[in-house]
Length: 357
Picture 1 (spheres, rainbow, N blue to C red):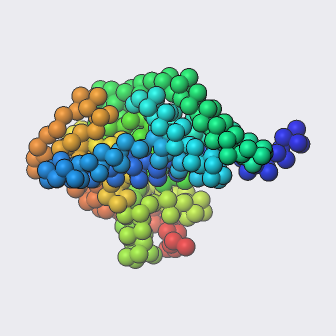
Picture 2: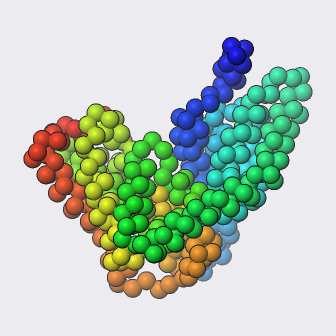
Picture 3: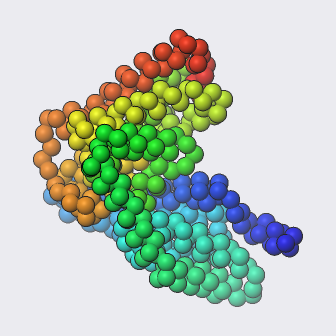
């Protein structure tokens, strides 16, 4: 056992929740952002403007989402160059074989292939042959074997959430909004989770509401301590910056969570807000305004995942735009500070509790 531990340490193979559930998952979301998400935005610009040049660029970017995710995962796992480059083929195969659940298949398979590749890397005199061969053979074989059932399971679970939200929009509006919002602030990737579950439609709208409640809520209610820099870094960056403060005083998290429980059902029941862009947008909130961009692109050019659930392009009316602005910006900016004010009055939150390092 000691020899195995020594070998894993030498190969930098760390079997842990942090390495796989946080580092790899977060990197996968970045890979997805740099391919599918930005490609979707550029393609939508091309479609709406009639400029074929942008449509082509967006299409090319979207096409390499599998390789981009796998390489990003390999980078997070500190894979050697030969392993890292070989993961492009693994990602393509896993994403293609996984269908609608491709991102989850890529996550699982890329991790296994990368660790196998790292295990044999630089162990032979013909490393240039052995390392890529092992990485690709393991990865593609797993893609053919387990990616389809993984994709089916992820797709089924996503459809279950979608159907439940349609049947119980009030209750599920609260559940989805709160849980995805919490995931956004935790050191895990809400964007990757939404992508894995192909979260679109009303459920996607609730997820957007929850993420915005966290980001805009923390940004506005901590304005006294963090001023304009904090407003921008949390409102357009990530509420994850508050995690050290949450660990010190978990009660500072109450206001954004309660706000998400309020805005979620308002999104699903009052404004019928749907996020039919790329599923990753459901877990982005106001980060680079990607959540809002996802909603808008979904109006004009629904993603394949949304179309598969019956989504169609629409011409948004005044209530659609009003709902988007209220849910994503106005309500979180108003409700969260009010709740936080009550928490301050009872002594649960004090000056300095929200100060960013």
